[in-house]
Length: 263
Image (tube, rainbow, N blue to C red; front, side, top):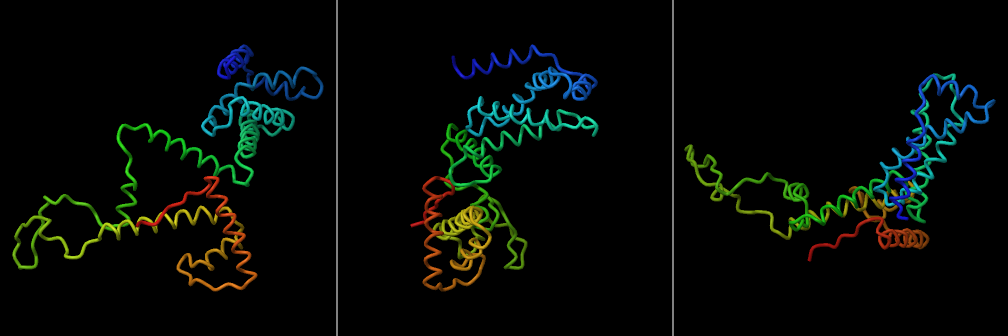
């Protein structure tokens, strides 16, 4: 049986369990420690909440059954820890524990190199969007319009646009292409500027994976953020080589991008 069929059968089974009213829920929590079936009823009545939350993380690549199983563990913890005397809705309280358990499962499957789960989720969303763009009928540009605009640092106008000629002292309307400055950004300059922008962005990604002390050392060692590049002692160079080896590992695993300078 396919995974999707198993999940459908599981969902249909859960739907047969009636939802609890607020008063019924409070009564069951009050009798949770005295009635053997109270805890079971609370769990069964809230399993559909687990599926609803797990479906929101299907894009991460973690199999949905694994997400549901992790969410169910979070639900069990919520049922055992919930204090009915605080006046909170159980669904709100349980959502926190279910999400925490799911995030832990996703983070465990993320990689053997530690990566914050929030960053991993953002990367998965980015990869999902990239996959959608790959199926577009037109070929995507190498650089985004925003990157090009920032690199050129000027607005784009059609050559047919007319402007006023103020040099002659007369309000004469002339074509824009006749008023362009003599020195323009060359293609090489534009690509170089875009490359530097991308390199800075990738450097920021790399710094995230290191402790503040190592990140600061990288910035000083290689002259990031306008700081002057510093010489290093033999001991410092060995430490730098260790950091660079970790960076190469991150690149090889696809954790950070790698851009090539323009030719």
